[in-house]
Length: 592
Image 1: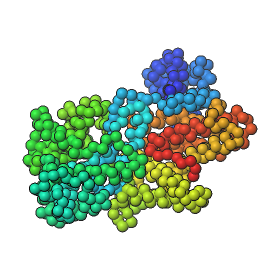
Image 2 (image 1 turned 90 degrees about the horizontal axis):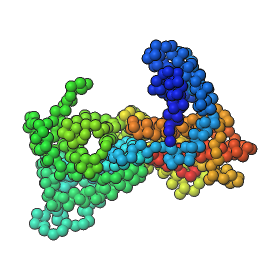
Image 3 (image 1 turned 30 degrees about the horizontal axis):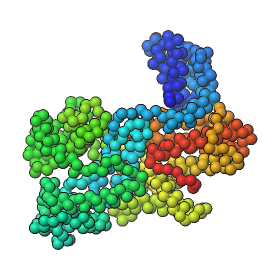
Image 4 (image 1 turned 90 degrees about the vertical axis):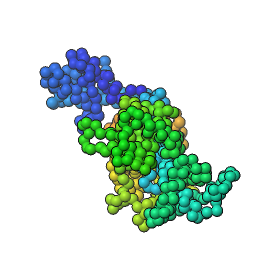
């Protein structure tokens, strides 16, 4: 269904054209002075320059025609004010009709604008053989929300974890495993049989092997050379090393899926850098044949600088002087794979802002070489750092990098303790509820910030049931559920929504108007890859509901029709809030 701003514009356009002005001037915006009006049209200001008239005269012409025209019942007030603004208030009955229509539509009337379009979202980036830590949190949470948003709008969203599974860490693990368990068949050059199906390590052992090997390589040059050689052999098909690599992948993937799953994060593709390797030889040859790649100090590079760049951009290194490919090469190979299999109409990469130069280089090479159409959007959604209260990147109390599962456990424990302060439920229910609220607190605490900005992880604030927090949003939804349940208990039919009537109070109308913003916010948030705008919307909607609730005796209303209208309105509010939190990647419990 149409956005309410478009409905208002459609009603205003004839007044402009009948007055002799172009309809394009009938642009409607939300008022930034809600004390004066609800919506505003500033078209008379712009039209004045075109038609050489005073803005106030144009505004008066338009306002008078609207209030005397066929759409006058849509408005309670339209006034022209100096120097030429048109202030608009909608009629209570019209807003109610809009909400009733919205309530009957699938997805509350949200149009599926993305049919037949495929979008790749690259939002994982974890390395295998390493546990997820807090540095992986933002890409996972933001990426999951962007994927859900696009899918809700009808796009074919393909989320790819894009694992780091092919670099030096593999050689390091292989050589550390050799030192620890030299009798394994993988290290017997005469072994001819099938390698064991069971991995020679657990996830706990694997997570110890890598950091030990990494530290050893910094102190022991001969070990580092061994690891580099093992990596080279692996990448060139060494049978035994490929078998170890498959074990690393199976053990790591099971652990990664479990930990991403605890965040409510899923991927459609579990691919890694290794999947791009088959494309790299042809990719390098193609870049050379097209005259884009050339040798510089022994390395193969592509110039990506353009006239008009605001800063100097170095060439993109495709192959190092020692013959090794880099992340850029791997990402270009991945793009070739994605173009071949999915032909996406858009790419969205979600990483921290330190990788800005890398993606400028990759995107430019991809388009210069013709691997991606020049018209295809390639978006790098850069996010800032999650910091501790000291303003520095978040660490454990001991100063180390915190594992993600420990962070989730800590926030769940904190919520559990808060629930148990006023214990009204069983311990099992309290634990289950704490998990739901804890995830909401964590995700909302992250997503409510503009992605590009750093933010402070403040657990006390995040788990608060007051203010702009996830628990406050959930508490609002649970409060509505409670009202609906009590209404049903007293003989009302909460499952059959009453027709919403025109607002009987300012608080009720404000709640109604907040709901109508839904059609603007969802596509706007996706178009700008800005989930924080959904957070702001549901916070304002929750606030509007609670003000309405505090000023209205919903369950004591004696007029049955009016009470049914209240129930219909808050039921719609609950539905919109639940839709939005699902897009953010969390849910509400039945009670709190």
